[in-house]
Length: 510
Image (cartoon, rainbow, N blue to C red; front, top):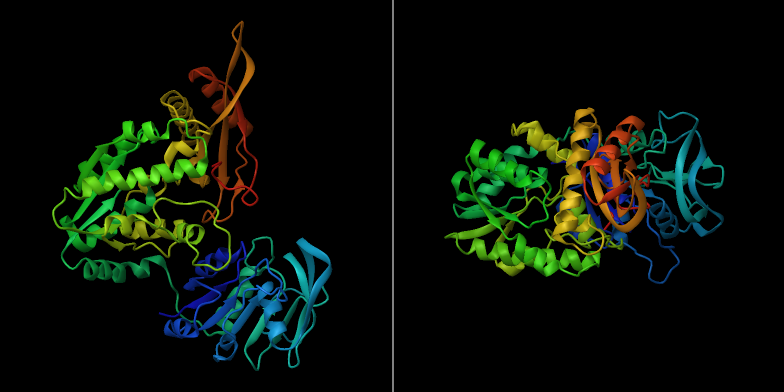
Protein backbone atom coordinates (compact mmCIF):
# COMPACT_ATOMS: atom_id res chain seq x y z
CA UNK A 1 0.00 0.00 0.00
CA UNK A 2 1.27 3.46 -0.90
CA UNK A 3 1.92 5.85 1.95
CA UNK A 4 3.53 9.11 2.97
CA UNK A 5 5.64 9.10 6.14
CA UNK A 6 5.72 12.02 8.58
CA UNK A 7 8.76 12.45 10.81
CA UNK A 8 7.75 14.23 13.99
CA UNK A 9 9.96 16.90 15.56
CA UNK A 10 7.56 17.85 18.33
CA UNK A 11 5.00 20.13 16.70
CA UNK A 12 1.57 20.35 18.28
CA UNK A 13 0.27 20.20 14.70
CA UNK A 14 2.00 16.99 13.54
CA UNK A 15 -1.18 14.93 13.90
CA UNK A 16 -3.02 17.45 11.74
CA UNK A 17 -0.67 16.78 8.84
CA UNK A 18 -1.69 13.13 8.98
CA UNK A 19 -5.37 14.00 9.32
CA UNK A 20 -5.34 16.36 6.34
CA UNK A 21 -3.58 13.82 4.13
CA UNK A 22 -6.04 11.10 5.08
CA UNK A 23 -8.93 13.43 4.26
CA UNK A 24 -7.46 13.40 0.74
CA UNK A 25 -7.58 9.57 0.76
CA UNK A 26 -3.80 9.43 1.15
CA UNK A 27 -2.56 6.97 3.75
CA UNK A 28 0.19 8.18 6.05
CA UNK A 29 1.81 7.33 9.35
CA UNK A 30 3.82 9.30 11.90
CA UNK A 31 7.28 8.16 12.96
CA UNK A 32 9.65 9.75 15.49
CA UNK A 33 12.26 12.06 13.98
CA UNK A 34 14.94 9.54 14.99
CA UNK A 35 13.45 6.67 12.98
CA UNK A 36 16.27 4.64 11.39
CA UNK A 37 16.54 4.85 7.62
CA UNK A 38 16.04 1.08 7.47
CA UNK A 39 12.65 1.45 9.18
CA UNK A 40 11.66 4.22 6.78
CA UNK A 41 12.67 2.25 3.69
CA UNK A 42 10.93 -0.91 4.94
CA UNK A 43 7.61 0.91 4.55
CA UNK A 44 8.32 1.86 0.92
CA UNK A 45 7.01 5.43 1.27
CA UNK A 46 6.32 7.67 -1.71
CA UNK A 47 7.62 10.70 0.18
CA UNK A 48 8.58 12.19 3.55
CA UNK A 49 7.28 15.18 5.49
CA UNK A 50 9.37 16.78 8.25
CA UNK A 51 7.07 18.36 10.81
CA UNK A 52 7.46 21.57 12.74
CA UNK A 53 8.77 21.67 16.28
CA UNK A 54 9.66 23.96 19.19
CA UNK A 55 13.46 23.64 18.88
CA UNK A 56 16.09 25.74 17.13
CA UNK A 57 18.40 23.98 14.69
CA UNK A 58 21.34 25.54 16.56
CA UNK A 59 20.39 24.10 19.95
CA UNK A 60 22.88 21.42 21.07
CA UNK A 61 19.97 19.08 21.83
CA UNK A 62 17.95 19.99 18.72
CA UNK A 63 16.22 16.93 17.23
CA UNK A 64 17.99 15.80 14.06
CA UNK A 65 17.03 12.90 11.81
CA UNK A 66 19.40 10.46 10.20
CA UNK A 67 20.70 12.86 7.55
CA UNK A 68 20.47 10.07 4.99
CA UNK A 69 16.74 10.85 4.74
CA UNK A 70 17.67 13.71 2.42
CA UNK A 71 19.43 11.41 -0.03
CA UNK A 72 17.04 8.45 -0.32
CA UNK A 73 15.73 9.64 -3.65
CA UNK A 74 12.36 10.42 -2.03
CA UNK A 75 10.65 13.81 -2.22
CA UNK A 76 10.88 15.62 1.12
CA UNK A 77 8.64 18.42 2.39
CA UNK A 78 9.88 20.45 5.36
CA UNK A 79 7.29 22.34 7.44
CA UNK A 80 8.44 25.19 9.73
CA UNK A 81 11.25 23.57 11.78
CA UNK A 82 11.49 21.03 8.95
CA UNK A 83 12.27 23.88 6.55
CA UNK A 84 14.89 25.34 8.88
CA UNK A 85 16.47 21.93 9.31
CA UNK A 86 16.62 21.47 5.53
CA UNK A 87 18.15 24.89 5.01
CA UNK A 88 20.72 24.32 7.75
CA UNK A 89 21.66 20.88 6.38
CA UNK A 90 22.32 22.23 2.89
CA UNK A 91 24.34 25.30 3.89
CA UNK A 92 21.65 27.96 4.15
CA UNK A 93 21.46 30.52 6.95
CA UNK A 94 18.99 30.17 9.83
CA UNK A 95 18.73 32.64 12.71
CA UNK A 96 16.31 33.99 15.27
CA UNK A 97 13.65 36.15 13.69
CA UNK A 98 13.63 39.84 14.58
CA UNK A 99 10.01 39.32 15.53
CA UNK A 100 8.49 35.94 16.28
CA UNK A 101 5.44 35.14 14.16
CA UNK A 102 2.36 33.51 15.70
CA UNK A 103 -0.86 33.78 13.78
CA UNK A 104 -2.08 34.78 10.34
CA UNK A 105 0.24 36.31 7.79
CA UNK A 106 -0.26 37.46 4.19
CA UNK A 107 1.65 35.24 1.76
CA UNK A 108 2.76 36.25 -1.72
CA UNK A 109 3.48 33.31 -4.02
CA UNK A 110 6.22 33.72 -6.62
CA UNK A 111 6.35 32.04 -10.02
CA UNK A 112 7.98 28.70 -10.70
CA UNK A 113 6.84 26.59 -7.73
CA UNK A 114 5.76 22.96 -8.14
CA UNK A 115 4.60 22.77 -4.52
CA UNK A 116 2.46 25.91 -4.68
CA UNK A 117 1.12 25.38 -8.20
CA UNK A 118 -2.52 26.29 -8.75
CA UNK A 119 -2.75 28.56 -5.69
CA UNK A 120 -3.77 32.22 -5.75
CA UNK A 121 -0.98 34.79 -5.90
CA UNK A 122 -1.90 36.00 -2.41
CA UNK A 123 -3.43 34.18 0.55
CA UNK A 124 -3.47 33.99 4.35
CA UNK A 125 -1.28 31.41 6.08
CA UNK A 126 -0.72 30.37 9.70
CA UNK A 127 2.73 31.09 11.12
CA UNK A 128 4.19 29.76 14.38
CA UNK A 129 7.95 30.19 14.62
CA UNK A 130 10.77 32.01 16.36
CA UNK A 131 13.58 31.21 13.90
CA UNK A 132 13.60 31.83 10.17
CA UNK A 133 15.64 31.07 7.07
CA UNK A 134 17.71 34.13 6.18
CA UNK A 135 19.48 32.67 3.14
CA UNK A 136 18.44 29.68 1.03
CA UNK A 137 21.06 27.02 0.25
CA UNK A 138 22.75 26.88 -3.13
CA UNK A 139 20.48 25.26 -5.71
CA UNK A 140 17.27 26.31 -3.93
CA UNK A 141 15.03 29.16 -4.99
CA UNK A 142 12.52 31.18 -2.96
CA UNK A 143 8.90 30.44 -3.92
CA UNK A 144 6.94 32.60 -1.46
CA UNK A 145 7.36 35.59 0.81
CA UNK A 146 5.18 36.80 3.69
CA UNK A 147 4.63 39.97 5.69
CA UNK A 148 7.02 39.19 8.50
CA UNK A 149 9.33 36.69 6.79
CA UNK A 150 11.32 37.36 3.63
CA UNK A 151 11.66 33.64 2.85
CA UNK A 152 8.46 31.71 3.50
CA UNK A 153 8.91 28.85 1.04
CA UNK A 154 11.76 27.36 -0.95
CA UNK A 155 12.44 24.36 -3.15
CA UNK A 156 15.04 22.44 -5.11
CA UNK A 157 13.13 20.26 -7.60
CA UNK A 158 16.31 18.58 -8.81
CA UNK A 159 16.89 17.15 -5.34
CA UNK A 160 13.18 16.68 -4.66
CA UNK A 161 13.31 19.02 -1.65
CA UNK A 162 10.48 21.42 -0.79
CA UNK A 163 9.80 23.54 2.28
CA UNK A 164 7.39 26.06 3.76
CA UNK A 165 7.80 28.24 6.85
CA UNK A 166 4.06 28.27 7.58
CA UNK A 167 1.72 25.42 8.54
CA UNK A 168 -0.41 24.18 5.62
CA UNK A 169 -2.05 21.58 7.89
CA UNK A 170 -3.78 24.19 10.09
CA UNK A 171 -7.26 25.08 8.88
CA UNK A 172 -6.47 28.81 9.18
CA UNK A 173 -4.09 28.46 6.20
CA UNK A 174 -6.01 29.09 3.01
CA UNK A 175 -5.60 26.29 0.46
CA UNK A 176 -3.34 24.44 2.89
CA UNK A 177 -4.83 21.07 1.97
CA UNK A 178 -4.12 21.84 -1.70
CA UNK A 179 -0.43 22.28 -0.82
CA UNK A 180 -0.31 18.87 0.83
CA UNK A 181 -2.13 17.36 -2.16
CA UNK A 182 0.34 18.98 -4.56
CA UNK A 183 3.17 17.35 -2.64
CA UNK A 184 1.66 13.89 -2.20
CA UNK A 185 -0.01 13.42 -5.57
CA UNK A 186 1.73 15.94 -7.84
CA UNK A 187 5.31 15.57 -6.61
CA UNK A 188 5.39 12.13 -4.91
CA UNK A 189 3.10 10.53 -7.48
CA UNK A 190 0.71 9.00 -4.91
CA UNK A 191 -2.12 7.48 -6.97
CA UNK A 192 -4.25 5.28 -4.68
CA UNK A 193 -7.46 6.42 -2.94
CA UNK A 194 -7.17 5.08 0.58
CA UNK A 195 -10.15 4.81 2.94
CA UNK A 196 -10.69 3.17 6.34
CA UNK A 197 -13.03 0.62 4.77
CA UNK A 198 -10.20 -0.49 2.49
CA UNK A 199 -8.58 -1.86 5.64
CA UNK A 200 -11.58 -4.04 6.47
CA UNK A 201 -10.68 -7.28 4.69
CA UNK A 202 -7.04 -6.99 5.68
CA UNK A 203 -7.87 -6.24 9.33
CA UNK A 204 -10.24 -9.20 9.61
CA UNK A 205 -7.62 -11.51 8.11
CA UNK A 206 -4.92 -10.07 10.37
CA UNK A 207 -7.00 -10.57 13.54
CA UNK A 208 -7.84 -14.11 12.49
CA UNK A 209 -4.19 -14.93 11.83
CA UNK A 210 -2.98 -13.30 15.05
CA UNK A 211 -5.59 -15.03 17.22
CA UNK A 212 -4.80 -18.38 15.55
CA UNK A 213 -7.94 -20.04 16.87
CA UNK A 214 -7.40 -18.94 20.46
CA UNK A 215 -9.77 -16.98 22.69
CA UNK A 216 -9.66 -13.18 22.61
CA UNK A 217 -10.97 -11.00 25.43
CA UNK A 218 -12.36 -7.54 24.76
CA UNK A 219 -12.61 -4.88 27.45
CA UNK A 220 -15.85 -3.52 26.04
CA UNK A 221 -16.80 -0.06 27.23
CA UNK A 222 -19.75 0.50 24.90
CA UNK A 223 -18.08 3.51 23.30
CA UNK A 224 -17.44 3.87 19.58
CA UNK A 225 -13.85 2.59 19.65
CA UNK A 226 -14.30 -0.62 21.62
CA UNK A 227 -17.62 -1.29 19.85
CA UNK A 228 -16.06 -1.14 16.37
CA UNK A 229 -13.06 -3.17 17.54
CA UNK A 230 -15.39 -5.82 18.99
CA UNK A 231 -17.55 -6.10 15.86
CA UNK A 232 -14.43 -6.25 13.69
CA UNK A 233 -12.96 -9.01 15.86
CA UNK A 234 -16.24 -10.93 16.00
CA UNK A 235 -16.32 -10.87 12.21
CA UNK A 236 -12.90 -12.50 12.27
CA UNK A 237 -13.17 -15.03 15.10
CA UNK A 238 -16.86 -15.32 16.04
CA UNK A 239 -17.58 -16.85 19.45
CA UNK A 240 -13.88 -16.96 20.28
CA UNK A 241 -14.39 -13.31 21.29
CA UNK A 242 -15.36 -12.90 24.95
CA UNK A 243 -16.42 -9.42 26.07
CA UNK A 244 -16.12 -8.07 29.59
CA UNK A 245 -17.79 -4.86 30.70
CA UNK A 246 -16.57 -3.40 34.00
CA UNK A 247 -19.02 -1.15 35.80
CA UNK A 248 -16.67 1.24 37.58
CA UNK A 249 -19.43 3.29 39.16
CA UNK A 250 -18.16 6.18 37.03
CA UNK A 251 -20.52 5.71 34.10
CA UNK A 252 -23.09 8.05 32.65
CA UNK A 253 -26.81 7.47 33.00
CA UNK A 254 -27.87 4.51 30.82
CA UNK A 255 -24.41 3.33 29.79
CA UNK A 256 -24.62 -0.11 31.38
CA UNK A 257 -28.19 -0.69 30.20
CA UNK A 258 -27.24 0.18 26.61
CA UNK A 259 -24.37 -2.32 26.75
CA UNK A 260 -26.70 -5.18 27.56
CA UNK A 261 -29.31 -4.10 25.03
CA UNK A 262 -26.93 -3.73 22.07
CA UNK A 263 -24.19 -6.31 22.52
CA UNK A 264 -25.92 -9.02 24.51
CA UNK A 265 -29.56 -8.85 23.43
CA UNK A 266 -29.19 -7.59 19.84
CA UNK A 267 -25.77 -8.80 18.67
CA UNK A 268 -25.76 -11.96 20.80
CA UNK A 269 -22.13 -11.59 21.89
CA UNK A 270 -20.67 -13.35 24.91
CA UNK A 271 -20.76 -10.49 27.43
CA UNK A 272 -20.02 -10.51 31.16
CA UNK A 273 -21.02 -7.38 33.13
CA UNK A 274 -18.97 -6.96 36.32
CA UNK A 275 -20.11 -4.55 39.03
CA UNK A 276 -16.92 -3.21 40.67
CA UNK A 277 -18.27 0.24 41.56
CA UNK A 278 -17.72 -0.12 45.32
CA UNK A 279 -14.06 -1.04 44.78
CA UNK A 280 -13.37 1.91 42.47
CA UNK A 281 -15.14 4.50 44.62
CA UNK A 282 -13.44 3.20 47.75
CA UNK A 283 -10.00 3.66 46.24
CA UNK A 284 -10.83 7.12 44.88
CA UNK A 285 -12.03 8.43 48.25
CA UNK A 286 -10.20 11.63 49.15
CA UNK A 287 -8.13 11.69 45.91
CA UNK A 288 -8.19 15.06 44.13
CA UNK A 289 -5.17 14.90 41.76
CA UNK A 290 -6.28 14.22 38.16
CA UNK A 291 -3.26 12.03 37.39
CA UNK A 292 -3.66 10.06 40.62
CA UNK A 293 -7.30 9.47 39.75
CA UNK A 294 -6.32 8.16 36.33
CA UNK A 295 -3.64 5.88 37.73
CA UNK A 296 -5.88 4.49 40.48
CA UNK A 297 -8.64 3.83 37.95
CA UNK A 298 -6.19 2.30 35.49
CA UNK A 299 -4.60 0.00 38.07
CA UNK A 300 -7.96 -1.00 39.53
CA UNK A 301 -9.34 -1.69 36.09
CA UNK A 302 -6.37 -3.95 35.35
CA UNK A 303 -6.91 -5.79 38.63
CA UNK A 304 -10.64 -6.35 38.06
CA UNK A 305 -10.24 -7.19 34.40
CA UNK A 306 -7.36 -9.59 35.09
CA UNK A 307 -9.41 -11.39 37.74
CA UNK A 308 -12.31 -11.86 35.33
CA UNK A 309 -10.06 -12.79 32.42
CA UNK A 310 -8.51 -15.64 34.41
CA UNK A 311 -11.96 -17.17 34.68
CA UNK A 312 -12.09 -17.53 30.88
CA UNK A 313 -10.41 -20.72 29.81
CA UNK A 314 -7.77 -20.41 27.10
CA UNK A 315 -7.79 -16.60 26.94
CA UNK A 316 -4.61 -15.64 25.09
CA UNK A 317 -5.21 -12.19 23.61
CA UNK A 318 -6.63 -8.85 24.68
CA UNK A 319 -8.54 -6.72 22.18
CA UNK A 320 -8.47 -2.95 22.71
CA UNK A 321 -10.04 -0.05 20.82
CA UNK A 322 -6.93 2.11 21.10
CA UNK A 323 -6.90 5.00 18.60
CA UNK A 324 -4.07 6.97 17.03
CA UNK A 325 -4.59 10.10 19.19
CA UNK A 326 -4.37 7.89 22.31
CA UNK A 327 -1.05 6.52 21.11
CA UNK A 328 0.23 9.93 20.10
CA UNK A 329 -0.64 11.65 23.39
CA UNK A 330 0.31 8.79 25.71
CA UNK A 331 3.36 7.13 24.21
CA UNK A 332 6.51 8.77 22.96
CA UNK A 333 6.17 7.41 19.43
CA UNK A 334 6.07 10.85 17.94
CA UNK A 335 9.29 12.49 18.93
CA UNK A 336 9.88 15.18 21.54
CA UNK A 337 6.28 16.25 22.04
CA UNK A 338 5.02 16.57 25.59
CA UNK A 339 2.73 13.94 27.08
CA UNK A 340 -0.54 15.76 27.75
CA UNK A 341 -2.22 13.14 29.91
CA UNK A 342 -2.13 9.43 30.50
CA UNK A 343 -4.68 6.96 29.15
CA UNK A 344 -5.26 3.79 31.08
CA UNK A 345 -6.04 1.84 27.92
CA UNK A 346 -2.65 2.49 26.29
CA UNK A 347 0.32 0.53 27.51
CA UNK A 348 0.63 -1.41 30.75
CA UNK A 349 -2.45 -3.61 30.57
CA UNK A 350 -1.10 -6.34 28.27
CA UNK A 351 2.26 -6.48 30.08
CA UNK A 352 0.63 -6.95 33.48
CA UNK A 353 -1.82 -9.51 32.16
CA UNK A 354 0.83 -11.37 30.12
CA UNK A 355 -1.47 -11.63 27.13
CA UNK A 356 -0.99 -10.85 23.48
CA UNK A 357 -2.42 -7.53 22.34
CA UNK A 358 -4.71 -6.94 19.37
CA UNK A 359 -5.30 -3.27 18.50
CA UNK A 360 -6.91 -3.13 15.05
CA UNK A 361 -7.72 0.61 15.32
CA UNK A 362 -4.33 1.77 16.56
CA UNK A 363 -3.63 3.94 13.51
CA UNK A 364 -7.14 5.36 13.04
CA UNK A 365 -8.66 8.69 14.00
CA UNK A 366 -12.15 8.82 15.51
CA UNK A 367 -14.04 9.82 12.35
CA UNK A 368 -12.22 7.07 10.44
CA UNK A 369 -13.38 4.55 13.05
CA UNK A 370 -16.96 5.69 12.50
CA UNK A 371 -16.56 5.24 8.75
CA UNK A 372 -15.19 1.75 9.33
CA UNK A 373 -18.12 1.04 11.68
CA UNK A 374 -20.60 1.97 8.96
CA UNK A 375 -19.01 -0.51 6.60
CA UNK A 376 -19.55 -3.09 9.39
CA UNK A 377 -23.22 -2.02 9.59
CA UNK A 378 -23.04 -0.95 13.22
CA UNK A 379 -26.14 1.13 14.18
CA UNK A 380 -25.72 4.90 13.97
CA UNK A 381 -26.70 5.52 17.64
CA UNK A 382 -23.67 3.46 18.65
CA UNK A 383 -21.32 5.07 16.13
CA UNK A 384 -22.39 8.63 16.81
CA UNK A 385 -21.94 8.53 20.57
CA UNK A 386 -19.76 11.31 21.86
CA UNK A 387 -16.31 10.27 23.14
CA UNK A 388 -16.26 9.23 26.78
CA UNK A 389 -12.94 9.04 28.67
CA UNK A 390 -11.71 5.78 30.18
CA UNK A 391 -11.66 7.22 33.72
CA UNK A 392 -15.31 8.20 33.22
CA UNK A 393 -17.00 10.78 35.40
CA UNK A 394 -14.09 10.73 37.88
CA UNK A 395 -12.28 13.33 35.79
CA UNK A 396 -15.43 15.39 35.37
CA UNK A 397 -15.97 15.62 39.11
CA UNK A 398 -13.20 18.06 39.95
CA UNK A 399 -11.78 17.31 43.37
CA UNK A 400 -13.01 14.52 45.61
CA UNK A 401 -15.11 11.84 43.89
CA UNK A 402 -18.04 10.87 46.12
CA UNK A 403 -21.31 9.02 45.44
CA UNK A 404 -23.23 12.22 46.15
CA UNK A 405 -21.22 14.33 43.72
CA UNK A 406 -21.34 11.62 41.05
CA UNK A 407 -25.13 11.49 41.38
CA UNK A 408 -25.36 15.27 40.89
CA UNK A 409 -23.10 15.20 37.83
CA UNK A 410 -24.76 12.14 36.30
CA UNK A 411 -28.20 13.70 36.50
CA UNK A 412 -27.04 17.08 35.14
CA UNK A 413 -25.28 15.33 32.27
CA UNK A 414 -28.41 13.32 31.45
CA UNK A 415 -30.56 16.46 31.27
CA UNK A 416 -28.02 18.28 29.10
CA UNK A 417 -27.82 15.40 26.61
CA UNK A 418 -31.61 15.12 26.47
CA UNK A 419 -31.96 18.79 25.54
CA UNK A 420 -29.15 18.69 22.95
CA UNK A 421 -30.67 15.61 21.30
CA UNK A 422 -34.17 17.09 21.32
CA UNK A 423 -32.86 20.26 19.66
CA UNK A 424 -31.10 18.28 16.89
CA UNK A 425 -27.65 19.41 18.00
CA UNK A 426 -26.17 16.13 19.21
CA UNK A 427 -24.79 15.12 15.80
CA UNK A 428 -23.36 18.61 15.25
CA UNK A 429 -21.18 18.43 18.37
CA UNK A 430 -18.02 16.35 18.73
CA UNK A 431 -18.29 16.08 22.49
CA UNK A 432 -20.76 17.46 25.02
CA UNK A 433 -20.62 16.92 28.75
CA UNK A 434 -20.94 18.51 32.18
CA UNK A 435 -18.20 19.16 34.73
CA UNK A 436 -18.96 19.47 38.45
CA UNK A 437 -16.80 22.21 39.90
CA UNK A 438 -15.53 22.13 43.49
CA UNK A 439 -17.02 25.60 43.90
CA UNK A 440 -20.11 26.66 45.82
CA UNK A 441 -21.77 29.99 45.24
CA UNK A 442 -24.66 31.93 46.71
CA UNK A 443 -27.99 31.81 44.93
CA UNK A 444 -31.68 32.42 45.51
CA UNK A 445 -34.10 29.55 44.96
CA UNK A 446 -37.70 30.40 45.75
CA UNK A 447 -37.55 32.78 48.70
CA UNK A 448 -34.52 31.10 50.24
CA UNK A 449 -30.80 31.66 50.02
CA UNK A 450 -28.86 28.73 48.56
CA UNK A 451 -25.19 27.83 48.65
CA UNK A 452 -24.69 25.08 46.08
CA UNK A 453 -22.35 23.67 43.46
CA UNK A 454 -21.64 25.01 39.95
CA UNK A 455 -21.92 22.94 36.76
CA UNK A 456 -19.82 23.83 33.71
CA UNK A 457 -21.12 22.84 30.28
CA UNK A 458 -18.47 21.80 27.75
CA UNK A 459 -19.49 21.41 24.09
CA UNK A 460 -16.85 21.34 21.37
CA UNK A 461 -16.66 20.94 17.60
CA UNK A 462 -13.80 18.89 16.15
CA UNK A 463 -12.80 16.44 13.43
CA UNK A 464 -10.43 14.16 15.32
CA UNK A 465 -10.12 15.54 18.85
CA UNK A 466 -6.59 16.80 18.32
CA UNK A 467 -7.87 20.37 18.05
CA UNK A 468 -11.33 21.65 18.95
CA UNK A 469 -13.39 24.82 19.06
CA UNK A 470 -16.23 25.52 21.47
CA UNK A 471 -19.67 24.94 19.99
CA UNK A 472 -21.85 28.01 19.43
CA UNK A 473 -25.11 26.62 20.82
CA UNK A 474 -28.26 28.73 20.41
CA UNK A 475 -28.88 30.86 23.48
CA UNK A 476 -32.37 29.49 23.96
CA UNK A 477 -30.95 25.94 24.04
CA UNK A 478 -28.35 26.91 26.62
CA UNK A 479 -31.10 28.58 28.58
CA UNK A 480 -33.24 25.43 28.62
CA UNK A 481 -30.29 23.30 29.70
CA UNK A 482 -29.45 25.69 32.52
CA UNK A 483 -33.05 25.99 33.66
CA UNK A 484 -33.59 22.22 33.77
CA UNK A 485 -30.35 21.52 35.64
CA UNK A 486 -30.95 24.17 38.29
CA UNK A 487 -34.61 23.21 38.67
CA UNK A 488 -34.30 19.43 38.62
CA UNK A 489 -30.88 18.63 40.11
CA UNK A 490 -30.60 19.15 43.84
CA UNK A 491 -27.25 20.66 44.76
CA UNK A 492 -26.80 22.93 41.72
CA UNK A 493 -27.68 26.62 41.63
CA UNK A 494 -25.37 27.90 38.87
CA UNK A 495 -24.51 26.80 35.30
CA UNK A 496 -21.63 28.23 33.24
CA UNK A 497 -20.47 27.56 29.65
CA UNK A 498 -16.83 26.86 28.71
CA UNK A 499 -15.80 28.89 25.65
CA UNK A 500 -12.15 27.78 25.47
CA UNK A 501 -10.73 26.05 22.41
CA UNK A 502 -8.10 23.29 22.21
CA UNK A 503 -5.38 24.43 22.26
CA UNK A 504 -4.77 26.14 24.65
CA UNK A 505 -7.13 24.03 26.78
CA UNK A 506 -7.73 20.30 26.52
CA UNK A 507 -11.26 19.07 25.84
CA UNK A 508 -11.61 17.42 29.23
CA UNK A 509 -10.97 19.55 32.32
CA UNK A 510 -8.77 16.94 34.00
